Structures are given as C-alpha cells and as structure tokens.
Amino acid sequence: MSAKLLHELHSHVEMRHRDGLLFRYVYAPEADEIESPKPYFHPLRTLAGDEVTIYRPHDHAWHKGLSMTASHLSGQNFWGGPTFVPGKGYVQLDNNGKILHRSWADLLCERDTVGFEELLEWVVADRRAWIAERRSVRVSEINEAEGFWSLDLRFQLENQREQPLVFGSPTTEGRPEAGYGGLFWRGPRSFRQGTILAAGGSRGPETMGRPAAWLAYTGKHDGSLRRSTVLFLDSPANPRFPNKWFVRSDPFACISCSFMFDEQYTLAPRDTLTLEYRVVVCNGEWSLERLEALAEAWQRRGHG
Image (cartoon, rainbow, N blue to C red):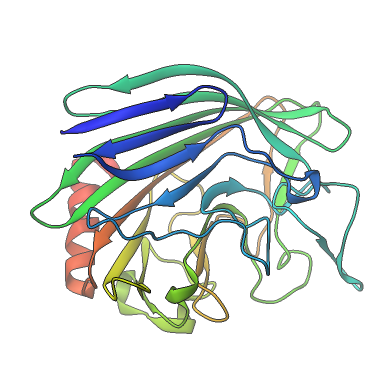
C-alpha cells in the first residue's frame, strides 16, 4: 500500500495515497457549542480526487462530512442545533453536548494497514462525561484497478453513568421519517437528487426507514462532471442488524446508519455498545450487481 499518515498536532490526521489526499480526520474541531463539536472526516475523496463530503453547509451548520453522532441521548443532543420536542417541533435547548478527543491509543502506518485508535469522551452540556469511547479507524484496502478504497470504522461506547443511557431519534419522539443518529454522512451539494440503491434491490425514497445490510449513494460532481459512489456496509455484529437507514437525496444528499431509527436503544450502566461499519469510496457509478458483489466479499472475510 503506497500510503502516508500525516499528523498535524492538536488538529487533524490526514491519509495520502500516491500524494493524493484520501481523507482528513479533524479530531480537535473549532466549532460553536451549539453545533455539538465532535471529530469528523472532511474531506473524503475518491482515488480520482473527487470530494464526496461537505463541511458546515449553511442549512445545517452542524453537518460536517462523516461523523459519529446522537440526536437524542437521554435528553442530550450530540447532533448539533435544535432538538425535536414533541408538540413543539425543533427547539434550541441548553443540551448540546460534545465529543472530545482525549488521547491516541495507536497510530499505524504499515504495509497492509493504515489507521489509528483514539480515546474520546462524550461530555454533556453541564460538563459531565457520560460515555468513554474507543474508536478505531483503518484503511486496509485500496484497489486502484477497480477504483475504490475502504474505510473501516469501529466505535466502542461505554456508559459511564449510574443510570441507563437511552439512544433515540426525532422519530422515536414522534416525527415520521426522521430517525437519524449514529454514523452520519452529508454529501456535496451537487449530489442532490442522486441515485440511492440498497441490498435486495430497493432504491430511491423507498429505502428510507427500511432495513438493509448495505446502502449506496451515487452523485455527480461539479467541475470534473464525474460520478462517484459511496457505499455503507452494516456489520452483522451490530445491534438490530440489518440496520434501518435514514437517507435523503432531496433537498440534499445524506445517509445515517440509524440503529435507533424508530425504536429506542438502551445501554445499561458500565455496559459497552460496539458498532462496526465499512465505508467504501468508489470512482464512478456502480451497479446493483457490483455493489452486491463487494458487500458479499466483505462478509466472506469475516463480517457475515
């Protein structure tokens, strides 16, 4: 693997392949408290150099590339912005938490694997730490012949409270088709009205809220006029597999891997919730058959 991992102290980590930037991971973001600051990936780029994320769009300033989030966590908001309140709609409350980088457990750049392990804390508005997290990021597959690379993510969330933690969403609070939370991706503005495909052959708006082992989004870029596909793979080891997806192509492109889409998930005190995903960033528009083959290959290697 011709790759380099570059660390800008107290700021971000970058991964480069043949001198092209594949991702920047900002672990110490500068953001307003109301945006629920948290680490994020931006930009994410294809091997062709096309950018498949957006940073701080004017319609939702707390949307930042690819990040781990929680819109409703026992009354706290780690998503950013206002909170959906039954009977009132979206209300700005004093409940915006933040996810803080605490230390590195590992920074790895070897022949077959590039990545890192990080220790973080989820801190609520009154500065108490509710979750201790161990996060693993790995790039172990760069396929130039097929035009894709894979980002493997693992989140281990330990409840530090003496009470259960309840993960919910606007949908669990009564708003239909708004079950966002967990791993969240916001695509470029040019990806609006792109193509959505999911395992089993479902596509387009019908994929909202439906369980599927994987979901993919294809959009077209300004400038280069090329297309790119971003594929999200849920792991059978995750709770409630296959995951229900929050996904939109209008008014903007976004995907959320929502294990709490329409049903709350409770994490007991001192218990750990582990979530694993693979995100595949692909050159061009990929067919259903090609996406299925890639998903099946990943499962055969120990994720199925």
